[in-house]
Length: 100
Image 1 (cartoon, rainbow, N blue to C red):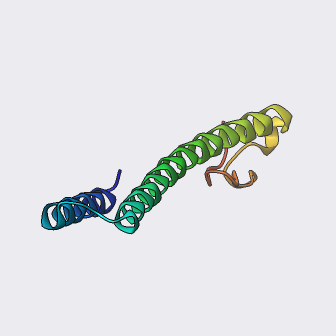
Image 2 (cartoon, helix red, strand yellow):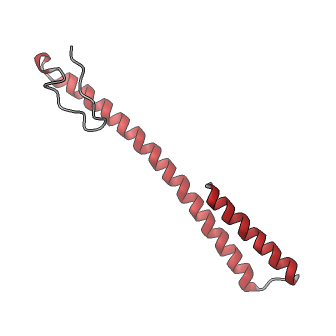
Image 3 (cartoon, rainbow, N blue to C red):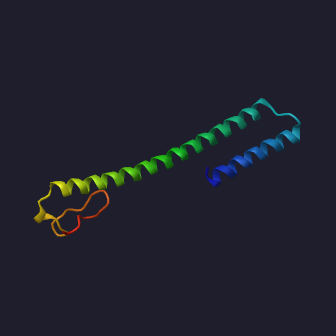
């Protein structure tokens, strides 16, 4: 959970507690607004976790694709073509096959 989300949640909880202390009871509208606001914050936290997971998946995919490209290039290239001047750049990590 981000610091901003955590501070927003704490402020909402504090404001709601203050509202209850001031009036000794709350209206249905205040209760509904509190629940809806916390639900929105929970959705935001879930979206943050999903974004972090997708970022990790993307990094793993890029690493796997770069390795697969290098292995495929090495397996399907004639030996006289291997080298930094002849080899194309790996589109996934920008590397070139090593010169033998």
